[in-house]
Image (cartoon, rainbow, N blue to C red; front, side, top):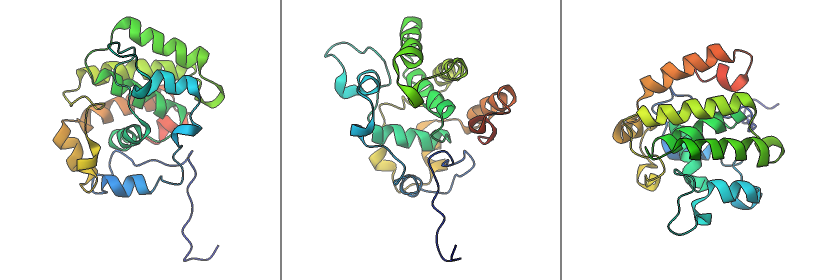
Length: 194
Protein backbone atom coordinates (compact mmCIF):
# COMPACT_ATOMS: atom_id res chain seq x y z
CA UNK A 1 0.00 0.00 0.00
CA UNK A 2 1.20 3.49 -0.85
CA UNK A 3 2.07 5.35 2.41
CA UNK A 4 -0.10 8.30 1.33
CA UNK A 5 -3.19 6.12 0.86
CA UNK A 6 -5.68 6.19 3.68
CA UNK A 7 -6.57 2.81 5.13
CA UNK A 8 -10.29 2.13 4.73
CA UNK A 9 -11.87 0.85 7.90
CA UNK A 10 -14.65 -1.75 7.82
CA UNK A 11 -17.87 -1.66 9.83
CA UNK A 12 -16.63 -4.35 12.23
CA UNK A 13 -13.67 -2.16 13.21
CA UNK A 14 -15.33 1.27 13.32
CA UNK A 15 -15.65 2.93 16.71
CA UNK A 16 -15.22 6.41 18.15
CA UNK A 17 -13.99 5.52 21.63
CA UNK A 18 -15.44 7.14 24.72
CA UNK A 19 -12.07 8.83 25.27
CA UNK A 20 -12.21 10.61 21.89
CA UNK A 21 -13.56 13.86 23.33
CA UNK A 22 -12.11 16.46 20.94
CA UNK A 23 -13.40 15.06 17.64
CA UNK A 24 -16.53 16.85 16.42
CA UNK A 25 -19.72 14.92 15.87
CA UNK A 26 -19.51 15.72 12.15
CA UNK A 27 -15.93 14.38 11.94
CA UNK A 28 -16.94 11.19 13.74
CA UNK A 29 -19.91 10.63 11.44
CA UNK A 30 -17.88 11.46 8.32
CA UNK A 31 -15.46 8.71 9.36
CA UNK A 32 -18.30 6.19 9.17
CA UNK A 33 -20.16 7.60 6.15
CA UNK A 34 -19.06 4.77 3.84
CA UNK A 35 -20.19 2.20 6.44
CA UNK A 36 -23.61 3.47 7.43
CA UNK A 37 -26.68 1.72 6.08
CA UNK A 38 -29.42 3.58 4.29
CA UNK A 39 -33.01 3.28 5.47
CA UNK A 40 -33.74 1.01 2.50
CA UNK A 41 -30.98 -1.38 3.61
CA UNK A 42 -32.66 -2.06 6.95
CA UNK A 43 -35.10 -5.02 7.01
CA UNK A 44 -38.74 -4.00 7.34
CA UNK A 45 -39.27 -5.77 10.68
CA UNK A 46 -36.47 -3.69 12.23
CA UNK A 47 -37.89 -0.48 10.76
CA UNK A 48 -41.31 -1.34 12.18
CA UNK A 49 -39.85 -1.86 15.65
CA UNK A 50 -37.18 0.87 15.79
CA UNK A 51 -38.13 3.72 13.42
CA UNK A 52 -40.57 6.36 14.73
CA UNK A 53 -42.05 6.93 11.27
CA UNK A 54 -43.80 3.57 11.70
CA UNK A 55 -45.35 4.48 15.07
CA UNK A 56 -49.11 4.15 15.32
CA UNK A 57 -50.53 7.60 16.17
CA UNK A 58 -51.17 7.84 19.90
CA UNK A 59 -49.25 4.64 20.67
CA UNK A 60 -45.55 4.52 21.51
CA UNK A 61 -44.90 0.81 21.28
CA UNK A 62 -41.18 1.29 21.92
CA UNK A 63 -40.03 4.47 23.60
CA UNK A 64 -36.80 5.86 22.23
CA UNK A 65 -37.40 4.96 18.58
CA UNK A 66 -35.17 7.10 16.32
CA UNK A 67 -34.29 7.49 12.66
CA UNK A 68 -30.93 6.21 11.35
CA UNK A 69 -29.15 9.58 11.44
CA UNK A 70 -30.05 10.06 15.10
CA UNK A 71 -29.11 6.45 15.86
CA UNK A 72 -25.66 7.04 14.34
CA UNK A 73 -25.14 10.17 16.46
CA UNK A 74 -26.01 8.18 19.57
CA UNK A 75 -23.43 5.51 18.63
CA UNK A 76 -20.77 8.21 18.63
CA UNK A 77 -21.84 9.82 21.91
CA UNK A 78 -21.99 6.48 23.71
CA UNK A 79 -18.60 5.43 22.32
CA UNK A 80 -19.95 2.28 20.68
CA UNK A 81 -19.17 0.68 17.32
CA UNK A 82 -21.45 -1.30 15.02
CA UNK A 83 -21.11 -4.84 16.36
CA UNK A 84 -24.12 -6.67 17.86
CA UNK A 85 -23.33 -5.83 21.49
CA UNK A 86 -22.80 -2.20 20.45
CA UNK A 87 -26.23 -2.14 18.79
CA UNK A 88 -27.83 -3.75 21.82
CA UNK A 89 -26.28 -1.15 24.12
CA UNK A 90 -27.18 1.84 21.92
CA UNK A 91 -30.81 0.74 21.56
CA UNK A 92 -31.17 -0.12 25.24
CA UNK A 93 -29.58 3.09 26.54
CA UNK A 94 -31.65 5.20 24.14
CA UNK A 95 -34.84 3.51 25.34
CA UNK A 96 -33.82 3.78 28.99
CA UNK A 97 -32.95 7.48 28.68
CA UNK A 98 -36.63 8.23 27.97
CA UNK A 99 -37.46 7.15 31.56
CA UNK A 100 -40.68 5.70 30.15
CA UNK A 101 -39.79 2.08 29.33
CA UNK A 102 -41.99 -0.52 31.00
CA UNK A 103 -40.97 -4.07 31.83
CA UNK A 104 -43.45 -5.29 29.22
CA UNK A 105 -41.94 -3.01 26.56
CA UNK A 106 -38.44 -4.22 27.43
CA UNK A 107 -39.54 -7.87 27.17
CA UNK A 108 -41.36 -7.28 23.85
CA UNK A 109 -38.32 -5.63 22.32
CA UNK A 110 -36.05 -8.44 23.54
CA UNK A 111 -38.39 -11.03 22.03
CA UNK A 112 -38.52 -9.18 18.70
CA UNK A 113 -34.73 -8.78 18.58
CA UNK A 114 -34.12 -12.42 19.46
CA UNK A 115 -36.83 -14.16 17.43
CA UNK A 116 -38.03 -11.81 14.67
CA UNK A 117 -34.91 -9.96 13.58
CA UNK A 118 -33.19 -11.60 10.60
CA UNK A 119 -29.64 -12.98 10.41
CA UNK A 120 -26.95 -10.53 11.52
CA UNK A 121 -29.48 -8.26 13.25
CA UNK A 122 -30.69 -11.01 15.61
CA UNK A 123 -29.71 -10.61 19.28
CA UNK A 124 -28.19 -13.55 21.15
CA UNK A 125 -28.73 -14.08 24.88
CA UNK A 126 -25.57 -12.05 25.55
CA UNK A 127 -26.86 -9.13 23.47
CA UNK A 128 -30.19 -9.29 25.29
CA UNK A 129 -28.29 -9.08 28.58
CA UNK A 130 -26.35 -6.01 27.34
CA UNK A 131 -29.60 -4.46 26.05
CA UNK A 132 -31.29 -4.91 29.44
CA UNK A 133 -28.27 -3.50 31.29
CA UNK A 134 -28.29 -0.51 28.96
CA UNK A 135 -32.01 0.16 29.51
CA UNK A 136 -31.35 0.38 33.25
CA UNK A 137 -28.20 2.47 32.80
CA UNK A 138 -30.08 4.91 30.55
CA UNK A 139 -32.82 5.13 33.16
CA UNK A 140 -30.42 5.99 36.01
CA UNK A 141 -28.47 8.45 33.89
CA UNK A 142 -29.39 12.11 34.31
CA UNK A 143 -28.92 12.77 30.60
CA UNK A 144 -31.60 14.15 28.34
CA UNK A 145 -33.68 11.62 26.44
CA UNK A 146 -31.30 10.71 23.60
CA UNK A 147 -34.22 10.19 21.24
CA UNK A 148 -35.48 13.77 21.67
CA UNK A 149 -32.26 15.70 20.99
CA UNK A 150 -31.78 17.75 17.81
CA UNK A 151 -28.26 16.60 16.94
CA UNK A 152 -28.03 19.01 14.01
CA UNK A 153 -27.19 21.83 16.41
CA UNK A 154 -24.23 19.87 17.79
CA UNK A 155 -22.53 18.73 14.56
CA UNK A 156 -19.51 21.04 14.85
CA UNK A 157 -18.98 20.70 18.60
CA UNK A 158 -16.50 18.29 20.19
CA UNK A 159 -18.07 15.02 21.32
CA UNK A 160 -16.94 15.59 24.93
CA UNK A 161 -18.63 18.99 25.00
CA UNK A 162 -21.86 17.52 23.60
CA UNK A 163 -21.88 14.83 26.29
CA UNK A 164 -21.53 17.50 28.97
CA UNK A 165 -24.23 19.67 27.40
CA UNK A 166 -26.81 16.86 27.37
CA UNK A 167 -25.80 15.46 30.77
CA UNK A 168 -24.36 12.19 29.44
CA UNK A 169 -22.02 10.91 32.16
CA UNK A 170 -18.89 9.46 30.56
CA UNK A 171 -17.76 8.11 33.95
CA UNK A 172 -21.03 6.15 34.31
CA UNK A 173 -20.59 4.67 30.83
CA UNK A 174 -16.94 3.82 31.48
CA UNK A 175 -17.80 2.06 34.76
CA UNK A 176 -20.35 -0.12 32.98
CA UNK A 177 -18.01 -0.75 30.04
CA UNK A 178 -15.40 -2.11 32.46
CA UNK A 179 -18.00 -4.55 33.81
CA UNK A 180 -19.06 -5.57 30.30
CA UNK A 181 -15.42 -6.10 29.33
CA UNK A 182 -14.93 -8.47 32.30
CA UNK A 183 -18.17 -10.31 31.49
CA UNK A 184 -17.36 -10.87 27.82
CA UNK A 185 -13.54 -10.84 27.56
CA UNK A 186 -13.55 -12.73 24.26
CA UNK A 187 -15.99 -10.39 22.51
CA UNK A 188 -14.34 -7.67 20.38
CA UNK A 189 -17.14 -5.17 21.04
CA UNK A 190 -16.76 -5.53 24.81
CA UNK A 191 -12.92 -5.57 24.80
CA UNK A 192 -12.43 -2.36 22.83
CA UNK A 193 -14.86 -0.04 24.64
CA UNK A 194 -12.49 0.71 27.53
